[in-house]
Length: 181
Image (tube, rainbow, N blue to C red; front, top):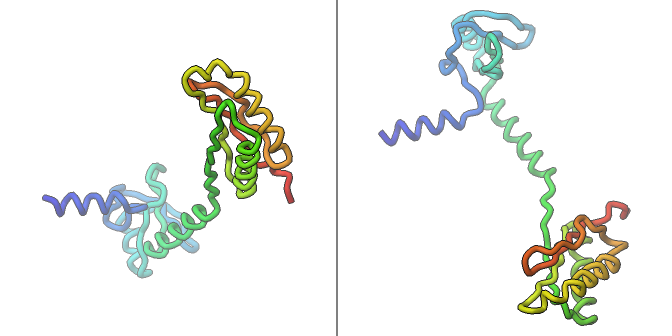
């Protein structure tokens, strides 16, 4: 019983149906110099004569489109293409910088230096002011602090999201400037 489940899961992971897995009675066959509709058995015989596989590449077409090719080579090329796409993806991390409503100048400059490093590495920076207890009364201090921070980051970053209050936090998001070369 467990073997059947394993076999079924393997079949589900395959990219395309090949050879005997194809169910349609007629198929459109694509190969070097061939583009015609024929019965499934004729297509299988043709693929076998060439020592290749019959691969169903467009199952929803009428009739389904099959290609005569080496299946393992097709899988290899597909995986290679996926790897290339993954390499080209850029993962943008969001770094956080936390302030209090009464942050001193020295702390402000220290955090500014770290934010500049993060931005230069291409990360987004989410800076926020966390209000404890009754300090929520000083919302304007938090907003002023974040705006001052955005101004200080002016040449390195631009504001993606203006200061916004959610619960006990007022936050703002900065992204790298694209004008550096």
